Image 1 (spheres, one colour):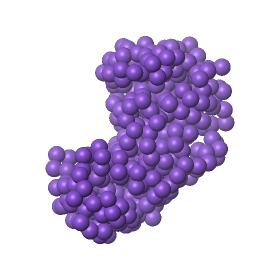
Image 2 (cartoon, one colour; image 1 turned 90 degrees about the horizontal axis):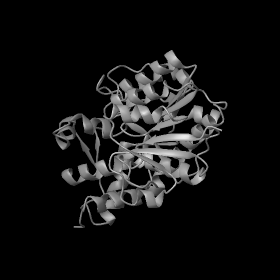
Image 3 (cartoon, helix red, strand yellow; image 1 turned 45 degrees about the horizontal axis):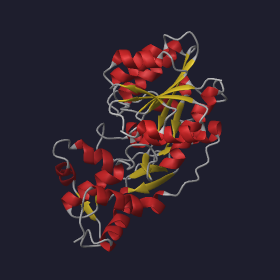
Image 4 (spheres, helix red, strand yellow; image 1 turned 90 degrees about the vertical axis):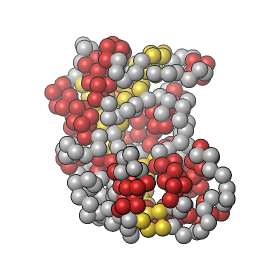
Length: 343
């Protein structure tokens, strides 16, 4: 049985939740984690986990660690090319088959900046990781996450006989994390910070742009099932060029999110109205003056996808609460983190 796993991103929202799930569900696995600054209580929480201290620029440390691993789960900075190249270098030193599972994200599906035609508007295109696999593995070089996704796909093409790869591509994620570090998602805290600046929940234009969502507890099960398949020698799972796993379980438009958020924040005394506000492209850019595209990516684009491959090959059956079920608690967590006092 192949059970030696190297993990990155363990103190992050996604990486920490995946790590905690593996440690809980598979105590028989030999887990090793790479951490830049380990939490002071990490060893007491996870006494059986080996700790390697280093950062994503420590090429030799990463390569050496990967060279001794059956499976590497890279959930750290998914866009850090040096870390990814170092992992692949280490895995290719091995004399036997190994597995690499790399985090991406459906930001790679955004229409913007290639076109502004769908900013704040509905796009009917929904990507399937089976029917649209060729589109997914050949995204434009300008697409988010494409440079590192391309590194993985190239390695799979050149070394697929010894290196089995999978790219896991989540939509926006909701729910509280369960790892040893960050517990909050990303979209809701960013939205709350932007609402504080503007004074109201908002949407761009008509707000009809749609985004996929998945609860963190559902999402981590895709990872667990992929690792279980790798431990079993690959299982009946696609690896390499077709090893691309979307994860969305539901959708919501930006206008819907803003309107429900307005009602929740009004009831909590944080905003003065139950009404959300439509804003212009110029207003959206002004919310993030140091990185104007951030607002368009986060709140103005469509990102629609279906987890067809996970359902077919991993038996993926979402069971966690819906986005709407946890929106209130996610918002209040973000409000508390932002130290946003009631009016």
